[in-house]
Length: 219
Image 1 (spheres, rainbow, N blue to C red):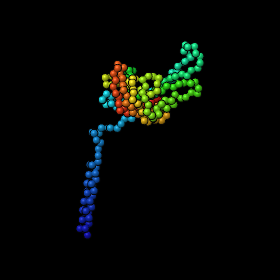
Image 2: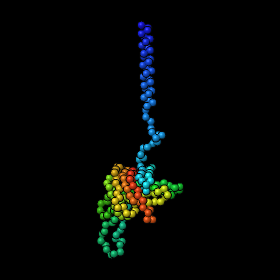
Image 3: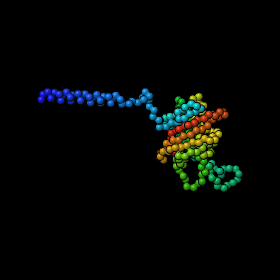
Image 4: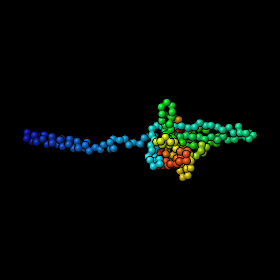
């Protein structure tokens, strides 16, 4: 009887060691983070693409902005016409990535704007924040090269400090808003894609292509 009990205890001990060995092997084969634990998670707010053949990335919390309404009083024209005229204004909402270079000097590294011409008729007011929100509706639209047209406008500062803008011929270029956040507070998240020809003001042009972005637009 004692012999059988001893054999049972030995068998139980062997089984426990085998179970521990299997458990240890499983722990050793658990995969770990690759690329030297580099965090490859996409930032929440960013602009990334390719500028003149080189990859670019702007990230961090962007600044949401809008323009204030600037009514044009057509009654002050000098043609002697006292008829009531509609007043035009350009609404702008968008996002920009900036840094402060010491003191109060602000440097803009990139921006994305949506512009819309509004014909103002003095009737029941329409909330400006609602208009800005409506301008961010997901859709595809063209760029503009002036302040008083509907469409998109983009700026980008290269590594040499040169500021490039989409103010120029944009034949064939479009910008797409793919998503929009909630109508809450003073800003909302929006995201999209675009490819645009960029100009430096001296007649030079470079392509900013395959851009994707996520930013905060003002309301």
